Image (cartoon, rainbow over all chains, first blue to last red; front, side, top):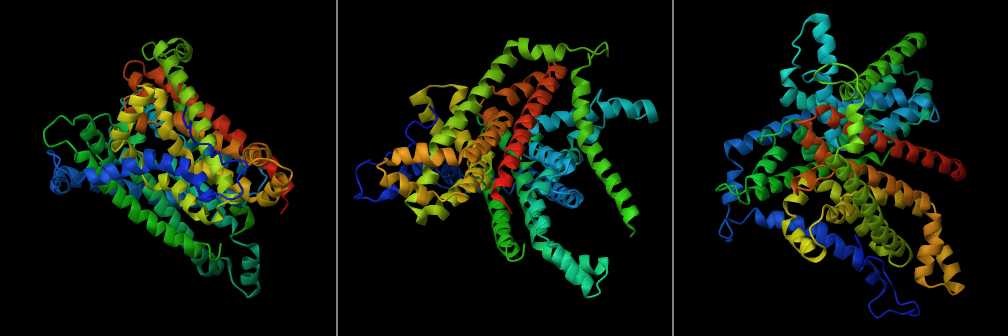
Length: 295
Length: 259
């Protein structure tokens, strides 16, 4: 059902097509147009329309309102903090793993677990942290028994700090996945060459390894940033109401569209999201080009 | 730094990471096997997974969605990728760009702009949660593309196709009976990731008001927290089994490639 018309069926006997073999790509291109390009264009165009169907900048101006600006600020802080923490800790974990042999159990377990946590939806992860630090949670109970902390759970789990903590839970694994190939590309010969020339371990790291890894590290950092900025499920499962960060504000504007002035505002917010992610991803692509020169 | 010190530090750090990742999952298990009122151990929440009609319906929907998405992905992407490699190599970069595009356009943005498209989808094929499969095919494209591309690059597809064509095979036969069996591991890998992604997808299904498994998990968490925790852990474990299976598939392929 999902793709009834998708198989390219070229005429079996025809060696020479009048329109050429690129006709075989049409089903794929048509599908992507309908389910990817049309929604995106709808968002971009919708952001510039007002409630009467005419074109205007009303919705775009609403982005400058306090609510939207606050949400954007929170989103940026959340994405940046979780990306930095995730990148540093993830790079460390990747290094611990890469020093083990490629076939070791440790490596296989870590990469598999990371694959699951980074790619599987955020709802589960949000619940895992609620079961840990929420009311009646595992750590909450243990800590309440041991040091007499609040048995109702930590109140900040549903605030910015809590979101950062829960986000690092999928950011660290993602960092391991994207940064591991770069670390593997660090050839032992380079270290041997440096040691041969009399370099200490410290000198090797600061003058050879870090400069080589810097573009890959920054690139991964940007990827993590975009990943956190676009994430919705974790935050939505943790915080059931309100527009605390941009993705949640989009939810509010979608569900309360009947309210005056909210119509189409979701489009403007979504456009804002596209712009931020597009900037970050183009930087990422540019850095990736520099990385491939060495690693 | 001495080798001994480093070894100890390394294991301590690994232990810290292990604790950070294991504790929330253990907490899920703990929460889902404990009665919220009597504080006693019980398997009731896990039993409810197969008995609560809302839950079983959601599990069925999500599994069917995963199936349709995988079928759609294979029917749409595999012939296109093979066709590009054999007949239109000039379009390689464009197809790659298009396949990776969903990574750049957040699912949240797609769902905001989806209403017009789904008005037509619902008009033509009816209003069912299973129509989500159409959009899920797009979401899994980047991952499937990478998996299939890796397999296809390791293969001399042109020579195989020429041999088959010179023996009189139609293009359809070339794609389905010559190339496809050779890239099967890549297709399977892409399918595994697709299943994992679909089972965990929340953004689009919740905002389109369709009751897939993650949506129901959030929905019932207010009424019956242990049951939703049990469902969350079960789905995570299921995805883990799939992806670990994938890593074994990867390993089996590797020795034959050589270094």
